[in-house]
Amino acid sequence: LSKKKCIPQSANDGSYPVPPDCALVEKFNTQDFTGTWYITSGLNPLFDLYDCQVHEFSASPHKLTGKLTWRVTTPDGGFITRNAMQNFVQKNPKRPGVLSNHDNEYLNYKDDWFIVSARLNNQPDDYVFVYYNGSNDAWDGYGGAVVYTRSSSLPKSNFPELRLAAAKVGLDFDNFKMTDNSCGPQPSLFARVHKRLFEGERALATNRNSSS
Image 1 (cartoon, helix red, strand yellow):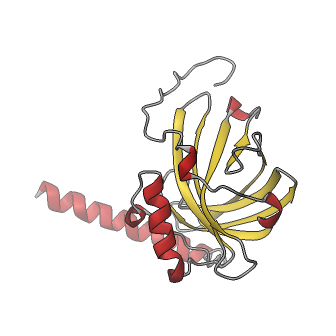
Image 2: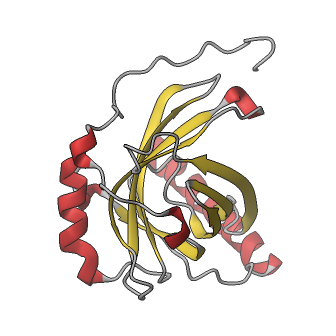
Image 3: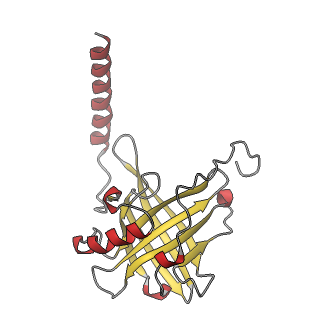
């Protein structure tokens, strides 16, 4: 795709514009955003709502490295675990709320994180609200928004702050969905086969009813 340009790049339609500086945090110390964090809420179903999004962050001044893990649900009800490493940099000290992940070989992608709101007190209700946009060889201008929390589920006490944060970047927090970070075991082979059979029988029944 990157070398032969066999698929035209989807143009940026402006759905995820760069937010104004006034919408971002005035201070953000990357070294406060370390350890185990979960994505517990997200906006874009294409990128943000996978199950079991457990991310391990390490940091040095103005730099952040994330070991990202998530699950992709398979049609039979099972899952495949995916992982990736990403590196972010605060390039401009006057804009600490902007973290950039550029110069990647895979699809030549580049992402920018915009920290809209954060609470980093080393407490269970800590959170970081990230709005992002990016570009790669297939799609220019993709984006979304996620909420990172230390807890595996989003504390309801954070909702008022998150509603305000979403509004700062033109979003409605009611459109966000909660993720499932229960991270349960792989379903048994029997359960997965049974699910496929049940869905196949249901599809046949639907076709019969629609044709009768």
